[in-house]
Length: 363
Ligand code: SAH
Figure 1 (tube, rainbow, N blue to C red):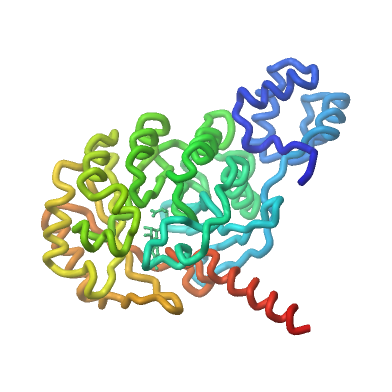
Figure 2 (cartoon, rainbow, N blue to C red; figure 1 turned 30 degrees about the vertical axis):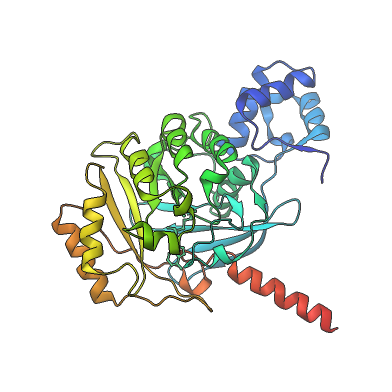
């Protein structure tokens, strides 16, 4: 580990504390914040209003570092995926998904995942650890570096305009670091991304859903994927801890309005959760919650026990929700050629690593 401390990931108060610790005035933190998060500077020597002696002092004790890019791949549809190396050599993936009216960065919160959802490839990998705030903010900054999007543009003109906490891991099992990272990202004098442009996706960690609503106020997406406890228990073990009734109550309490609905993600699994009765159950279940749906065709992976619901049936399912008054688009699979789609993250790099180990052992 480097002894030179990374300034990325510190809260404003912590950054001011560092300045005081090296005998500087706390207002230096405000200047640094602007250089780091608005301008994207990584070199203290470029921070022209700090003065040479301070630049020198900062260079000796600190760095401004993003995770290193181990691999970058761009799909034929424009989706870009980065495999990132952290200081301890653990890795996670970040994905950029360009759309007509926005560009979304999909960020990971953990290396691996403990949820073991049966349809998710990330879930077959053991949790290695939570990501630090610096590593979460750093993913977004590395993505912005890749598109040269510094200084922070006005909201209307951003290429990287939205964030979804939908990568590897369960963000609400790493609440403190995720909250700290998002607070940095939302800070108006830096990256300045509005909470309306950030969506956190959870499998349903009920106690932290409340905190997320009270403390962060970002958009919430919930991976529902089933309409009965029986089915949900089977495909998403977290349901045994926080069953549907509790989950739905927490969602009723979440700060929403008609313009800010909760997104229910629903992976369509053939013969498991995709019947017309399921669609009707779904409508009953979300009654009273400002809701919209996002139907996700199952992305298959080698060894998975599920099959893909035929598109006609997904469309029928979508129609039923629509007739009940809900928006229910079918999520387009993006970046499939670079394994960047939902539930596929890290699997490729894991496979490559295993292959490398095998080859090394054979030598
Ligand atoms: N742990 C959080 C964040 C992961 S988001 C959560 O559960 O919401 C990733 C989204 O992709 C989730 O909705 C997840 O259920 C979905 N997903 C996982 N595996 C998938 C697969 N094989 N095909 C389609 N969607 C999948």
